[in-house]
Image 1 (cartoon, helix red, strand yellow):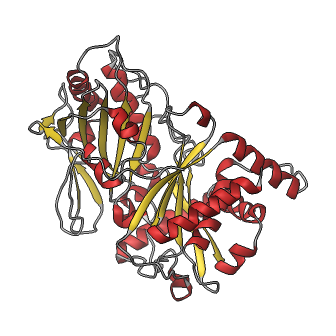
Image 2 (cartoon, rainbow, N blue to C red):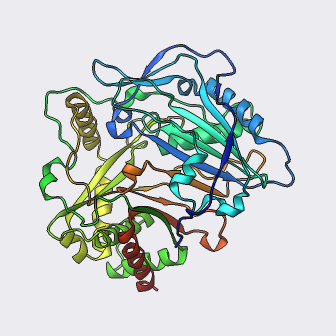
Image 3 (cartoon, rainbow, N blue to C red):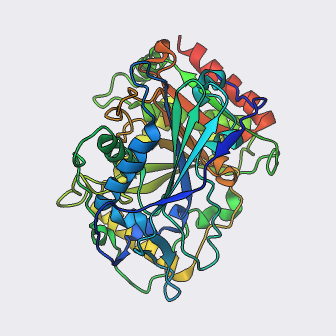
Length: 456
């Protein structure tokens, strides 16, 4: 398990911001987004840092390559060079192409990436210096850039690419598609392998007069609370779980269930363990309800399926609700069965249609969840969204990848990722990024250690 490094001073020297425009003429138009794009929870900037080690055989400067590639990328992904805003009439999002371009920054650091352990354990607030600084007041009716990039060059010859991209324009698959296209063009390809597809109209819900159903609204007064929340003393840590431990855990659960025909996925197993360990660490009250939110991709659910180049939001959330007592008394296999069952509901076309309708209702009524959220956990799986491979444009594949979440939402969001390439012993394993009150993090790590030892 890895503690975050806070003591390192990361001072950057930044060049003036540039606005990179498409290299060729592109359409001037206003584009509407889908119902899923318009979900109020998606109007947030997500940051991702890609870490590239120095390549002794390649002494070129990556900045000109990426600057040129970004300009070429925007010929295909021209909506990203516009600005995003909400209409006053119905609060729906629109991308307005004004030809301003994408903010592009270049920074230099006097440190070597190795001194930061290739940002594996860098404190979130320090790591944010490696991505574009975009502060947006979403409550005001303003327009803003949906995408911004920052390239930071280190003294060792390595560098990072930091992206800030609004979730309202694309989900994790979309982010991966865009960054792959960028690095393909930087490598000299004439065009991206996968061409972008808009088709947001395929995920627009029907209008009706039914009242909105706020997720969690029916149990607001019953939700569990923690004595550690609220607090300003939060800590984010990376927890490594080796492949052999995951296999032992799966094998144990299969024996426990007398070898069912359908096994458990890594996500189903780990989400069950993490949810249970988190609730214990936070000391949630036993009679309160705790909720696990699971994002399920639906690209293949539509008829016909969404095309490969679609880069908008194409997932819906499903929820598992248990009292803390039920969660703690249940076996890991029983919890994993709940997770598996919940995931399957997302594949029902009727469920999807109702979710689209209800999202439209929520926007219409400007309805939001306003209850106590101590016991809510959204655990996302970033391992198989296409972020890995095909990003070598002269410096091999990134040795590390680091997503960052806004501090006010990080407490309720956990991430499961593939490990960095820095530790060969972690091949096939996962790393889990969690944010908790400092006092609860101690117990959470102890719970996760106990889980590892239990299934040895």
